[in-house]
Length: 146
Image (cartoon, rainbow, N blue to C red):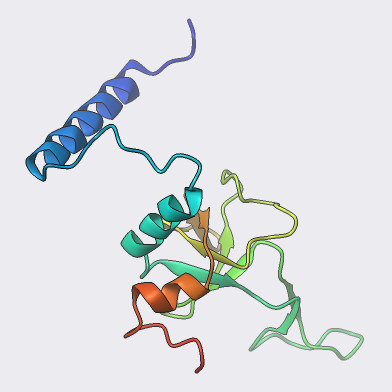
């Protein structure tokens, strides 16, 4: 009637209960909040997903292995929504169902939870982060000078 999926609602309730129990065992205040300080929240997400980071490609990146067109120029990959993963160097695009899809301007750096392969590689459940956070979170992996 209200387009609410009962099974999904029960799953969300179970996950919340599990997280609440875990926080209680760790003596964490489950009622605390970041308030209006969202950067702290995003840094926390970045710390948990730092291996799943992608950076936006430059505006005109010549693609490797593409044949030259009639004009004699190599194939061009537009940057909007196209990223390269930091770990593995895969070329990915933001999935069309993502909130970040088609965002103008596209975020420079994102973390994602899902890598989906259909006709091409897509990233889903995308959150914008600041690239300079990576060096603070995992300096042994991300050296921004190199």
